[in-house]
Image 1 (cartoon, rainbow, N blue to C red):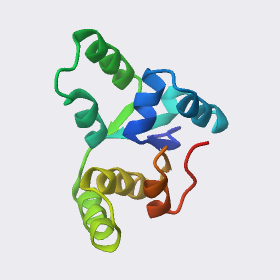
Image 2: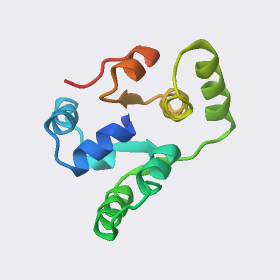
Image 3: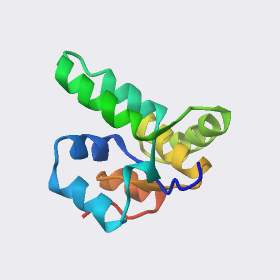
Image 4: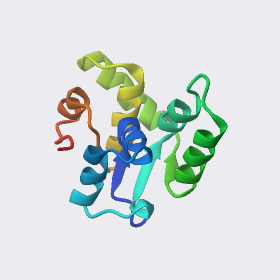
Length: 125
């Protein structure tokens, strides 16, 4: 994980794939290259598990995923996600993503204000 600085929330990845200004500005504000970011295993599942995903879009997602580190849901992530679910009002996927960032000591980049507040970090612009 040398050089990895941040964990991208699913909404940031979608924003980057669709070239949405908020997501692009968030990456630029942190002066990141894609080889410096990771995603949670749950983000990969969310991106590829969308019903009716067109083949071309799936190929774009797969190409993006190849450029990032995908962090697994291990026991440490599971335990932290359980703590977050018990203490905060968040959905399980959000708890897993936040827990993954916490366990791996990465900055979580998200456009979701609630998730940002849950982890006590700033959200995107």
